[in-house]
Image 1 (spheres, chains in turn orange, green):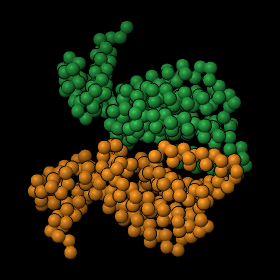
Image 2 (tube, rainbow over the protein chains, first blue to last red):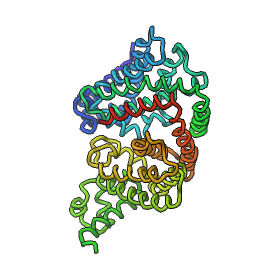
Image 3 (cartoon, each protein chain N blue to C red):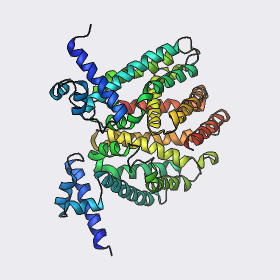
Length: 218
Length: 218
């Protein structure tokens, strides 16, 4: 059973995320969150030093939910294309209630000094969790992805997913259907693109792309 | 000759940009900018309604400087690879003094509601100017880029450049040499990748990538 302290923490996060969704991120102050949660302001700050920490909490929660939903959706799916689509669409499903708040999330997360920055040291655990979702999608695929790409593919797909998330933030179409269309259109192209890796000329360029991408990351 | 009003505007922008560089964006208030510029706070707000407007000013200035420097650098360069490298490196040169401020700039610019957002309506003129730099790089190349790609290539390269800028913001290596390395490594791969467009299998996938990218943009 959760301790009193854990309960207060969860309650605060829940209230904050609801207020972000309903009132907006900028408009929601720590003071208002504390009042709404029935907790003293000092106590609220004890659990979350800033709104950034609440954004981090949301990041971790959304990720956990994505991993669970993607895991369910992958059961019985064999080919990489279906697995990728399921992984991307469940990600969009989980983020959907937060669309209004997406821009604030990205603006907060993109600062190199933010604990939520997906490329920063502090978020290694959260990034690894997110990468794991794409690793599962690739590793369970049959037929398997080209051997040469198998090690790098999850990270490249995850980077692509960051691009999809950015596109989704800017997507003002109803229910963000343009992002859904992008996913449905892009996945078959990725799968066909991977098959091209077997053409010798393409293969040589790909070798150099992978080696550049590795040298840049380290 | 510039009117008194234009002079005040330019002076304010100059002072603000210097303070952003020297003190940092978060720490520089409109009040401090006005004081440093010897202008009343009310007067400062008359020229720039917020720090966001000053960021927009910086965006426009950096762009104009980039266009000028890239134009000079392109003189006498024939092949697409050299032209692209010159375009990207002059962009990095022009941004270099603002590296410290880069993260704040990106965090401001990435909000869909920001006038500085490179994808937003308000910044159409600035985006068009930036796109024009890449159009000039592609159109002057000899041998010419594959015909099929020529119309879309400037925009695709500009999107890639947005990625390079993001990489640069996170690049804490001395003088951002990792970004320079990325440019030097990626440009030859782009050029070789373009040559692959002539392989029939690649060509078919490329057709579908271009048609997806067009359908998504409109």
